[in-house]
Length: 421
Ligand SMILES: *Cc1c(COP(=O)(O)O)cnc(C)c1O
Image 1 (cartoon, protein in one colour):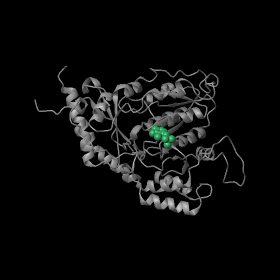
Image 2 (cartoon, protein in one colour):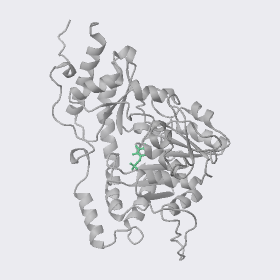
Image 3 (cartoon, protein in one colour):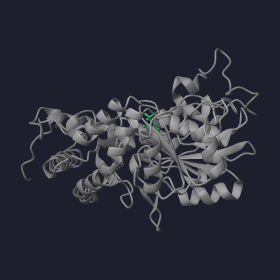
Image 4 (cartoon, rainbow, N blue to C red):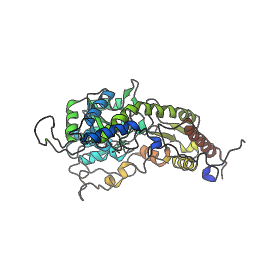
């Protein structure tokens, strides 16, 4: 038997003690003089609001051009970018929007906020992305839209979902908050351009950041106009009239956010390229570890790095792997989020408007939805035991990734070869 160092989890020496670059501080972000110069320009202009300045409109033009689409509407957050999309669909209260419960709450809260009912389809256990067959099963006469999330930057099956949406006269919204420059399907279409609307976030942790920020893109003139109006109190600024054409909110991006976002957009391709290159050795290493699997690597842009664990073969579940990695000095979590979104109080306990439970009551819903454990078994298995998530970063060095691999190999070896206690 070759000598095996014992796991830090069991009192052995950790592989790593130095911190990793992280999206939560300067070491893991590409923010620098370019952003400072841009911010100074805006401050000196005295124009900090997009209704008087030119930065936000310029960011929208540049983003639309980057993605090769006619329309882009900036807003204050990724959640608002999705709210704009849902509002553009204009559901009746109680209408249904099908989505995933394995996501940030920003995917789902706008549905509820627009008085539509989130309907949760299960995911593909190999990727954590929506399962098209499950989505198809959930369609009812009240379904108006589908929101697909490209989880961790892996491409969701949006070509298939777009075909389904077209067949059933639904709107497909792509949540690309984790998926800048993700490529989808054999033709490599950019995530966000396959559905009717694509939504991005510029929150601190995303591929690029302005602190907070969002942008919604699309090709359809009517959807884009409604999204734009919704973000600005439905005030038609392209006319001379001060009026409010429907119920809208103020979700405007500030000129300060836009100035930073424009500089970040210039750095996007480089950041994505670095994240993908850094992932290559880890992809190869995981391929040699029975019971562990990468998610989709083709077209993925690695917002986080998911490892799919088969506990029966890998000797432990994802949470145990995460504990062991953290003990070795490698940041990791089991399951991504602590519970599916349908089990958070806002949904499970219908904490919406007063005590009404609206719109999760019938009416306006046809049937009050039941958000309870067991609703999406594959999602629950991923969160409960099968999905290990390693933070990823554009500034990881080869040595950083080598430490992650060394720790994962050490842990895998111990968990799979350990003699029975
Ligand atoms: C971050 C995120 C959001 C919400 O974005 P915010 O900018 O934080 O509001 C929505 N969906 C997904 C998948 C996200 O990762």
